[in-house]
Every structure is written in C-alpha cells, then in structure tokens.
Length: 348
Image (cartoon, rainbow, N blue to C red; front, side):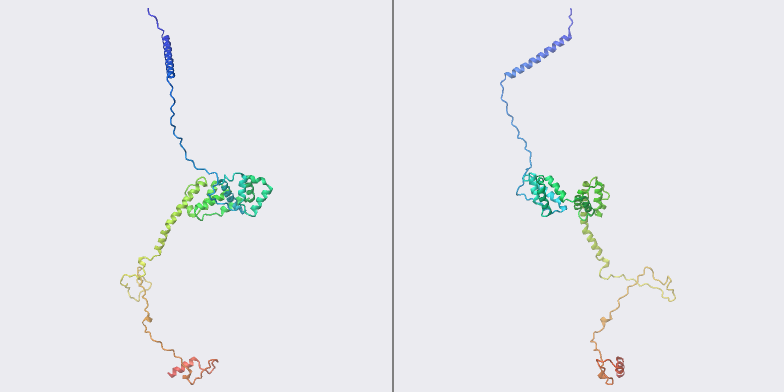
C-alpha cells in the first residue's frame, strides 16, 4: 500500500535544514577566529600630504617699499576724486599700520593743504570731534564741502567739448572718466562716442554692428584705430616716392633739346587769287608750324674798340658868342644850345 508524500512538508524540512547548516558554518567560523592568536596591526606608511603653493601675504607696510605720497589737496573741486583715490590706496597698502579710523583720519589730515582745506579740518576738530574717529562720516563731510554740487552740468560740458585728436585709447579713457557723473543710456553713450571719433575712423566702422554696451564697443574701436594708424605709417614712404616721381623730369622731357625728326616742309600752291578763307588755302589740321629760330646776337660780333671821348664845345672856340654866367640865368641875347649847334655846323 503506497503512502502519499506531502511535497510541501518536504520543502519546509529542507529549508529548515539549510538554514541550520548555514548557522552552524557561521558559528564555526566565529569560533575559529576567536581561537586563532591575534596579530598586532601593521601600520601602513602614509603618503605625505600634498602641499599647495601659497603666495606670500604681507599684512604690513615694509619700509623698503617706496610709495608715491598723495598730492597735497589745495581745495580745487577737480582734485577731490584723485586725492581721495590716492589716500585710500595708502589705506589698503598700509592696512597694518592704519588699523583704526582714527589712524586713517590722521593720515588723511597730513595731506590737506594750507588755506581752505586746513581751515575746514580745524573747524571739524573743534565742532565735530566725533568725526575724527569715523572715517566714512568724515569723508562724506569732506565731499559735501569741496566737491562741486553741479557735477552733471560740469562734466556734460566737458563731454561736449571732447573730440578725438589722438589715439582712440586716450580718447576713450577721457570719455569714460567724464561719464562717471553723467547718467546716459548705453545707446546714447555709444552714439555720443561715435560722433566724436575721427572721420576716417568713423568711415571704417560704419558697417560694424554695435554691441549693447559701451564697454564692449571701446576695445573694437581701439583695435580699428590701431590698424588704421599702422596702415597710414606703411603708406607714408609710398606716398613720398609717388610725389617724387611726379616731380621728377621724364625721359622725354630732359634738359637737352630734343631732336625733331627731319621732314620736308609742306608745300602750298602759291596763288594770289585764292581766297584766304577757302579750304584750299588753309594748312592741314595736322600741320605743326616750325619753331621760330632765335635772332642772332649782333652785339657779340661787334669789335670792341675804345669809344671816342664825348666832344663838348667850349665858348672859347666861338669868340663871337658871349659866355653866359654860370650863376645868372641866360639873358635874351645869350646863346642857347641850338645856336651853338648851328654855329658848329657852319664852322665844320
């Protein structure tokens, strides 16, 4: 009699045995590791850390470094911005020495010229001593006192009077400096910049597309101006040689007289009855008249003889005529030159 086999029961028993076998293997491996003598860990040599090159940072003013001192401020409105720029450059370069605002104010006061600037600082010292320890507030008061209040009108007039008369780089620097106080759009800046360029440079750039900003347009203009100047420099010797060729005598126009080819003279009918206005009496259109020969210099062939002395008749040769007085005027009976000539002709 056959007994039915429960397949599910067999699979469950097989899975249980496999799990038990895996657990037994893991326990055996753990026990084996615990029974094995422990070895001290070997220290692996470590590579030295990569050092990155660092720039030396000097946070102090070295006495061997010579700095250009700021120019003494004389109170002019045009010198306010350059003076403050020089002073603040010293603040950055000497940041270890000029640590506090009081140090910066003291350095700033050393370069105030006599007159209005010095009087202003003395008034601040007496009336607002708190500003001596507050550099931003002192700077704002300095600008209110000495900077021009109408900078827009001032620099607009400077821009209107500015035209390119040298390299485009120099012109662009001045143009950008004056634009600091003028509020123009980028399109207006580019248009005003272009119309003040040299005419030949404007013709060269007429077809170039304009970028959206003046900062992008200026390098292109400077490069075009440099190319144009290089071309002018290269063409200068060529232009000079062309001028020399124009003024130099041609071979056909030499200083020696040219030899005209000998040709028989034209013959015309000698008829006195011909009408001078008729076509037959006129020379042909291609007839070239012969040049008139120069007249001979007869004086060159005249023998050079001593000229006879000029004859001057004296009144001693003509006793019949009274001699006139050299002082008094001739009277009515005194001889005149014509009478003398007539007597001389009868005598000879």
